[in-house]
Length: 267
Ligand code: ZN
Ligand code: FE
Ligand code: FE
Ligand code: ZN
Image (cartoon, rainbow, N blue to C red; front, side):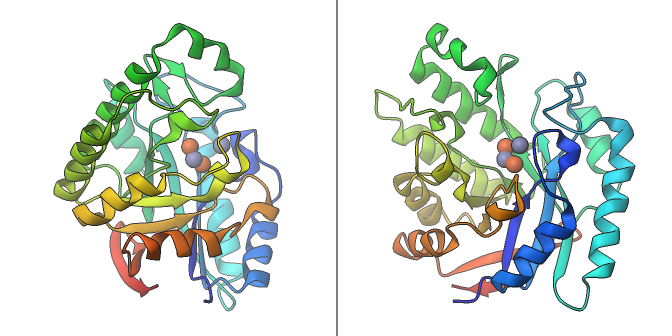
């Protein structure tokens, strides 16, 4: 199967990714991709976080940089311009203004914070000891549902991220996942299979097979992303991701343009 789109890729502007956009594009072309989407970490709207996201001042530079690479590689590959924007409850106005400041092709909405704790940041890993693991997951699914309801996001990123370092719920949270899947369906958001989890301690894709099956059964559409922070991550493990998608019943995935569905690609 020739891969079509890798929709989750970063740039050095976030402060923790390496390689220029050219190198990501060249790697994608080498792998046979027809399309990629850059979705670097959007500025945090509640405080500046150097090393985690680009700053507000860098946003125009990011847009211009991706426009430039899009033009230069136009004959070889389609390049979409996107953002991975955090969902921060209470800051919806600022978030909306930011994502509407430029005609992005899609916005990935991600939850990386619970009570101002960056639970997936290796530097904040000690806080896992202070939280009840099931409470973390319950709060996380609540935030995912809230994020989908804003209408800001076309794609919800890595939708079981709390498992990154290996912490699994100790009680059955199937009902929470089902409720989340129903909210995703009702609000019209898409999920991603994010292969970066395979590079993390948990060593499995986001979301898990069990969760992905629930999303598929609820009729939530799909995209694919490597969450590349290095050109060598582009398209990583997409063979496994496609096999996983098919095994739970997905038969297509989506391509976005101007925050609308542009194409449906058969799996
Ligand atoms: Zn990152
Ligand atoms: Fe993320
Ligand atoms: Fe990312
Ligand atoms: Zn991400």
